Image (tube, one colour):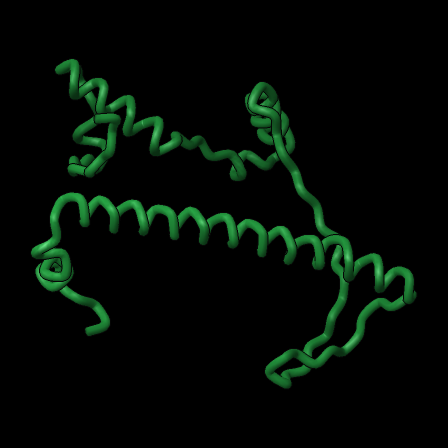
Length: 150
């Protein structure tokens, strides 16, 4: 049963009280948050090793590259590559677009709209009975359980 149907998944929760369902909902959320925190810690460790530890060690040892044996026995070449990170402050975005157009790089320019922000806008438009981009966007509504103070 690799990919259970909706009905099979729903049957798992049959017979539980609302309090038990909420307990399971909160447990899943807590485990998810813990997994996110762990993923962040592990990613920070990974990038510290790749961006600081290995480049410094190889520089100290005056090594350009070295063959290393992975835990699975496979051999790989380890080397340090120069990289670059570029960020544009929001207030400089239009200026950057103009610069890119002036230097033949307009193909790099894309406009985006944050999906959560758009969803909030459309929700408000729908709630107020105002026009919204129903023919342009795929809009679906759904229900979600939420806890509030009793």
